[in-house]
Amino acid sequence: MHLQIISAQFYKKKDNIISMNTSVKTALKDSLVIMPGYIVLGIGFGVLMNARGFGLLHSFQMALFIYAGSMQYVGVELLALPATYLNTFIMTIMVNIRHLFYGIGMLSRYKVLKKHRIYDIFALTDETFSIVCNKNMKGLSRQDYYFCLSLFNHLYWITGCVLGNVLGDILPFDYTGIEFSMTVLFIVIVVDQWEKNDDHLPVLLSFAISILCLAYFGRDNFLLPSMVFIIVMLYLLRMIRGADHA
Amino acid sequence: MHSYILIAIMALTTIAIRFLPFILFSKKTPSFILYLGKVLPYCTMAMLVVFCFRDTDTSSLYNCMPEILAGIYAVLLQKWRHDSTLTIVSATVLYMLLVQRVYR
Image 1 (cartoon, rainbow over the protein chains, first blue to last red):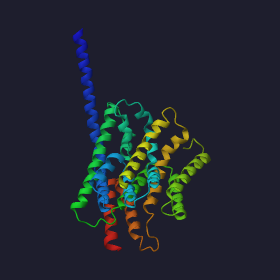
Image 2 (tube, one colour):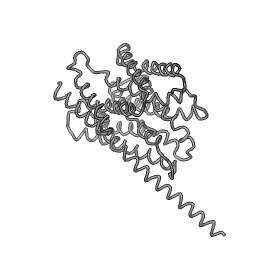
Image 3 (tube, rainbow over the protein chains, first blue to last red):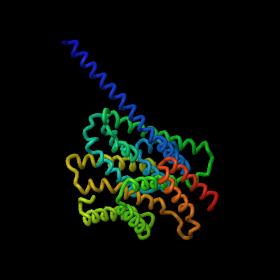
Image 4 (tube, chains in turn purple, yellow):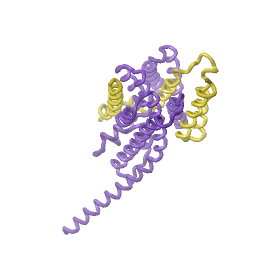
């Protein structure tokens, strides 16, 4: 009897181990889709930091603590200006506000996690979100899978950012125009989203609002009014079409 | 010193944004928020594209040719191949060549 309990416990433990191994392996496999993008984008960031005169430590800290690609690219410009505290704060909200909505998308799935929940929420980037929101979790341990995927992606990102800074030093090269990688990143996301969605009116109106705000408020001040007008536009659009349409 | 404080502001603000929904909507999420969750990420990207082109010199067609050519190239390549890394790397290289060698 006693032996049976022990062996049952043993098998239960073994089951857990197997499930963990599969989860880790699946996370590694899924993260490999993200790796080239993160390494390349990270290198772009590191090179840009180097070109603006910032060292390895700055790149490493930003990759470790901010861990948000587009924000870090914008951050290079903020550091180079240098921007005021208030402007930096507002700019971070503007660029990263979309993360609110990734969080909302993962509310039910991340809320129930017992282990690593804090880290998983911290590390929920555009790319990690794009994988976890569509993932079929059958046969996988949620907490192991989410944690490993987030961690692997974070490591690729840190590697890229640091590598870029080093490369900027050892490869004397004219990096003029490297900042265009950020523009292409956003273009790529818009193109992908365009093909996934049937309803293009919100994004077309967002383009129009942003361009009008840029013309009216100028390059330094147009983000905040754009954001406000876009949210008002979405609210009105939903009212006109009715809540069911959306 | 200033740069370290700026990095700290960026990091703490980003962290706060990522945690906010889990604090605010731990019980029930309003339907307008759920709707924003679906459409706003997409709309924000459109705004950020405009943000990236804010310094484009529109005084003559010649001056903004690198942005126009590399931008069109990026859209077409992404629609064709759907390889984000390939698009980002090649469009950036194209832009750098245009800015440094062609339209100086």
